[in-house]
Image 1 (cartoon, protein in one colour):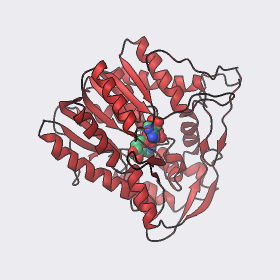
Image 2 (cartoon, helix red, strand yellow):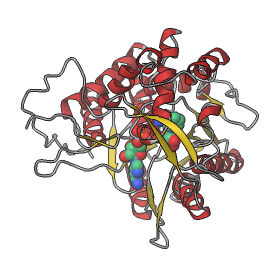
Image 3 (cartoon, protein in one colour):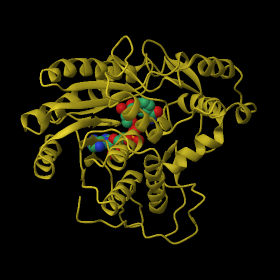
Image 4 (cartoon, protein in one colour):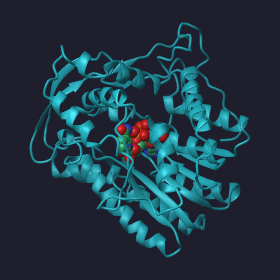
Length: 396
Ligand code: NAI
């Protein structure tokens, strides 16, 4: 089958297996060039098939030789429909890890469910006994409560009043104005339920009760703050409330884990084009400015550069990682640098459809958006016939 990107409302509906494989290989190459990366040897990544979770897994496996278990929710190819990008990315990880002699297991299913937690506990027990690092990197629009069966939806809305913002279509590069209506109390509560810390805490409890969380284990979840100009929609909006909850959960987990020498952290990461961030109004536009400015200054990073820096300079550098006044690790430090943000603010005021190609790295955004789905790699012949039923091996 010949696969071209199918994009609707900033969501890419298909993926290219060869491009996804190249995406993973390029991340592995980066890690190898920067090896060794300090990390524990037995690692669980929840949300391991894409974005920050995939890069965390690659950094631990290929940088530190860690054995890894990755949990994700992805769909295989069916009929003429390709698999989801994360499915191919996970396949590629498994192929490369096997080739490198790295032990690994992928579990595909709903991480919010009791069943997947139990399956993971059993897998840890039989494969590695216990885990020393748990990375929590889920991004999801829905969560089914494992006890009540009730479905919750996360929304990206401002709180208190409507928000009118310029937005960028990641595919066409066009600028449009969008009004996002203020969230209801119910929508706020549902977003916290999906993207807050409740499930992270349930995971840690399940691992402890199963006896598979090693004494001294470290857990980290990812958060975002961003610039003032996206505050109304992001940090002061519904998702910000969920991130507040995630960060409170980190403080609570940290107190509990310290008794056995363990730690729980939140790392505030840099804004990047991932499947999750592409659908947030105003954010792709901010990203276009940010990418240009950070590239010009030589400080632009992708998820893999972020994760390698997080492990080697913050989490496992041998000393207590530096944190902000709320106890968070800040790997968004370069994004939030005063000179970077001053330029973003200055240029934000000037954005129109005409000025954007000059002010923003629209091509860079489009390229990243395509590449997370395996498209837009110069090394791949996209006119070639492809087997969309990616290989499944016997090792999860
Ligand atoms: P992503 O969309 O690239 O990856 C999400 C992962 O979660 C995938 O592996 C997916 O399979 C998995 N997942 C989703 N629902 C699941 C379920 N029910 N069961 C099992 N797995 C499931 O997301 P991204 O952007 O890497 O986000 C990860 C975390 O990093 C989120 O907490 C996000 O808020 C945070 N973050 C993201 C930033 C960005 O700019 N993208 C910036 C800072 C933090």
